[in-house]
Image (cartoon, rainbow, N blue to C red; front, side):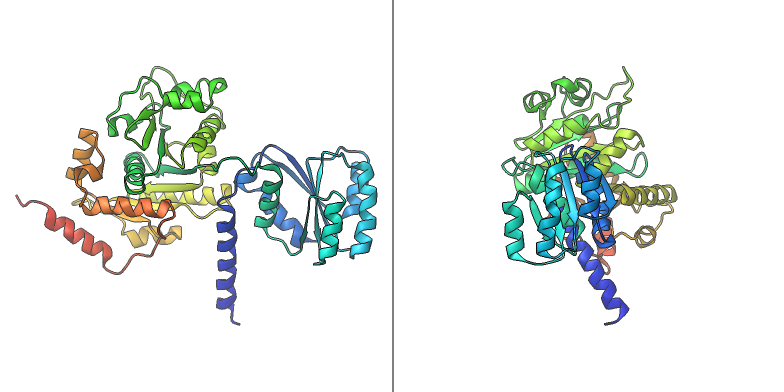
Length: 427
């Protein structure tokens, strides 16, 4: 097998692993300590510790097996979860675990990573109070899955997916794309969607949806002690049967400096009440915008085809890879393409240094976007058959998992642009 084949298999393995953890729920605030004998086990645990779903957990990895754990807990309290690797044979393993029972708190759970695929051993361990036994080698997804199974209530209702939209720079049209995508999801799939306008000073969601709610996201973030599903429901403005808006005040009466976790509780509760939560994140780099992007299920970056946007997008993509090492890369939308007489970077040249395939390249159409914005209506309401309305529909399909992101077909953008030019009235 050549190197290319090995690389392809490695890429497929990583993709499968990432796909496996996407539906896993975040784990609660717990302490986890691992005692490993090999790097093949310690490395996946360390990777799991960096995952956003494990953000609330405190994880510490030690080298050394069961004996090291017993010695350590003679002087230290045991955590919520202990992960132990052992290369001992089944009989020796059972004997080695006996001293651990003397120093382990009854409320602590123990997971064994062994090297023997033995059903009898598994049954004996479970009978003696071990929470789980898995056979090495293990993957990051195995660790996250086990922790989630042990500490997340299986009867809890599923959480909605969060789609965070952010612009590479001001004026990129990220909010417009976010609002239209949310509307398309409700229209196409009859799915409940909550839109949260997080730009408290200058948000435009209330204008785009032609709403003037008396309350919104500001009341929630400034009164965290009151946040629950009933209170949040009172703050939502109903834009349609399936679409609700948590509007921004769009006011400068006060400043909006928040703790990094300020919006986390609001988003968590919104996820319990709606299968899709669209987060309209302002173009700013603060603790809370960073946390919001890090914790979202999907991040969509909207950029215009110019050098400043390319630089900012590259910075965002690189940072998100560090913040979300076990998630897929963010989605890229290139907006306002083909502005007359404006020099711009070609879509292929823009995407190449980012290593991304654009989810969409949306042409500039001042009449369509202007009419929609000035009338408080969505693009699909202005012209359902317009090619850009079709692009928004495709974005909605991909972000909800109903379609896959595909590479641009040869001539596809050229055909679309030519159709747009033909549709424009001549002077």
